[in-house]
Amino acid sequence: MPDDSFARHAASLHSPALRLEPITPDDGADLTRTTRAINVAQSGTVRVVTAGGDTADIFVAAGIAFPVRATRIMATGTTATGICGMS
Image 1 (tube, rainbow, N blue to C red):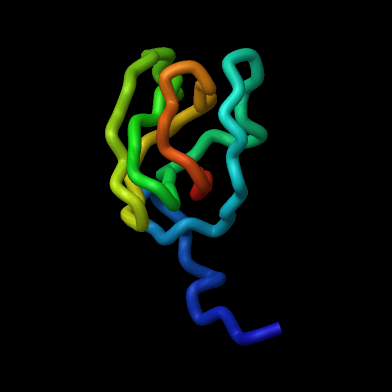
Image 2 (cartoon, rainbow, N blue to C red; image 1 turned 90 degrees about the vertical axis):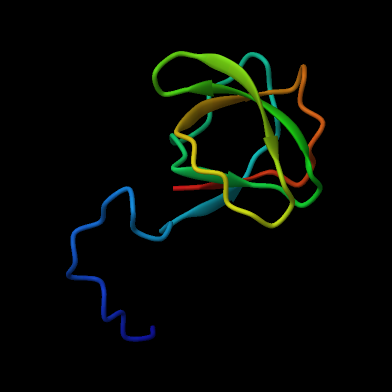
């Protein structure tokens, strides 16, 4: 395993993501873990439910991390594809 010079530093919301996981949008199921950002392979709208309980449509450009603490990514209303959760 490579040496991680940052392993002893406290993580914060400004820190790079430690985990990446593919997201399949689902109207009825929460994510495994709340995101700190999402990334998409193809630009489009993503309907999210935030950690604060709000539901909204956001436009996410391909290849750019969009900072949002999402607990659910809805299938209905989502047009972006290749969604990756960053936490």
